[in-house]
Length: 254
Ligand SMILES: Nc1ncnc2c1ncn2[C@@H]1O[C@H](COP(=O)(O)OP(=O)(O)OP(=O)(O)O)[C@@H](O)[C@H]1O
Image 1 (cartoon, protein in one colour):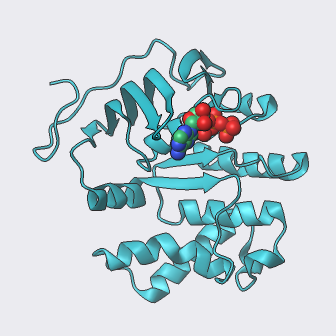
Image 2 (cartoon, rainbow, N blue to C red):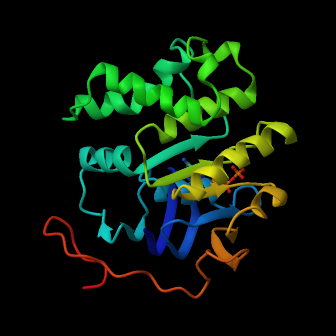
């Protein structure tokens, strides 16, 4: 589903070079719930951003469903992201001036403006459905400032799933929440995973990581662990999957 091959990421400023990721090789299988852990600054967010096509590696290859994304232009990357990937962040990233319902509709608006055919009514229906899935049907007209942290994160999850993405990437989704709310958010993510979503979650919390299928550990930009926590997770030794031919992109393994 997501394959990273020999990924290196270097951040360069005029005076400093930081090797944020060094020779990372990971294959995420369809339907897995994977957690990524490691000390502050070890490269977790950088890794998630590369998986989410928000950032490019300095070296190496990223493939989504076997398709190398290296040759994709920004617009193609944005379209692929909108179609396949839902993003959830620690600080929610909601738009304060928009109602809950309008926040959740945003990915569908993007899709409509880029050739999608969904009507305004169907977009709103989908947004309401997504809010129902996270138990927030009774807050559609509220604004983010009128919600608790856990509710804000549930809105963010509804926005992430409204377009039915196959992949959900979550960067410390419970990091700003107390343990009760954090557990609620984990239950929602587990439910989405049971329904078939592939989820990759960065966390500092071992107890949250233990609820996932597989734990990848990073240290200083290097992958230092990859363990299966429950059946269903792919093993550390798994080889990257095969790559299908698409004339518009290179093959990762010709
Ligand atoms: N835009 C940037 N420019 C320069 N260096 C950066 C940039 N973003 C991240 N880094 C550096 O890359 C390394 C990895 O950062 P990253 O944010 O991926 O770590 P992290 O594991 O997610 O950390 P945390 O747990 O504190 O959020 C760090 O040393 C950081 O200082």
